[in-house]
Image (cartoon, rainbow, N blue to C red; front, side, top):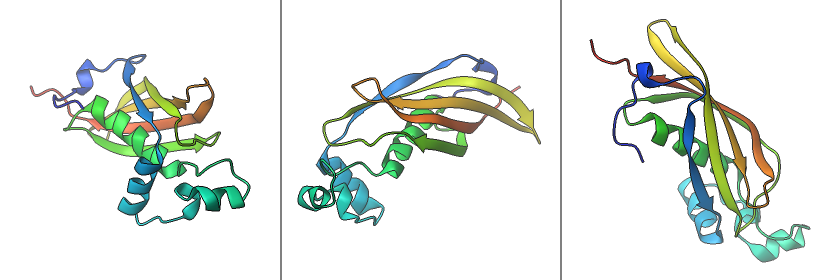
Length: 146
């Protein structure tokens, strides 16, 4: 987690966001479900998930989106604001999967006095499969004080 301010002037196209790794577990999936009031049994009940033809409970795609938001916000710092986050889930994640969340700065511009940065985002699992791609974020970064 970054506690220092990342200023717009210090960001360059091509900058890499430090990767964030998360290991999925049923406990983590249950906590996410409880915190979002999303109690869909497919995301925590192994017997129920198997009765529906799945190998195991699977990660709620929105949970992975939350991890992407954390990746971007940790990189951008506490004074930045995540304006937009979009992503497409490509494959399911299950307990035991290790996710590596990554990003690259693709564009920066000033619009209506706001200093904006766009990042390309993606998530790989331990098998090298793209879990999320494409993904993108737009962040409002503070300008360096004059």
